[in-house]
Image (tube, rainbow, N blue to C red):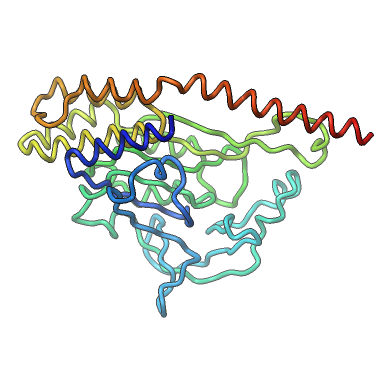
Length: 310
């Protein structure tokens, strides 16, 4: 299924020569899902990573205001943040890796300022900045309102992890006020140190959420591009490819339905694209079942080995 989704995205974007403008805030390293499903040739990436050097200049970070700021580099560099970790949570879950090993000075700007006069070039946004995600989004109010963002993947907290952090509720209210709604969510759980020996799911700490434009925002986006058939088809192709990559095919079908009602498509045929999406998913249930059986078998083998040693 993953390979078929990749082929679908490559073919769809290639049909209309569409390039997805993608802002990656704080993720670092190789592309992760859903972005890794997209063809690199059709992806224009803007990176913001605090721990990456810029020659003699200070590292550039995104926030809700401009200016210099102190940044805490954690023992596990992936947990570096503008915010200090809360000792109570670190102790409860044994997360000493969150503690800073050093501080560094960085230069801050906002999404709105950095992308001023080119909001329409941005189609996707990934924010993963350890408790500062809400502030990054606050700094992009004009981008969210005036631009053509078609998919966002936002990290969030549901437990008190950082001093002054944003919460999932803050992020959700902000994005809904700009016409985006929740399309997917993953929450990470951890076991407290005192019951780590007890096998259970644990308690919720943080996670990642997918947001997409509402039907009303998509309608407005398509109407704006209606005078230019090529621009409209590119917007549709990018939106559908992003939703397929993010594993929310229902949202892709909704975009195609809106585009069919709006009219103005020549190279793209909504019914055919829907059939291609359905075909890409035809073995998804079977593959998931096989994967679950494989994991159960691996676990059973491990348990037998443990009993044999005992």
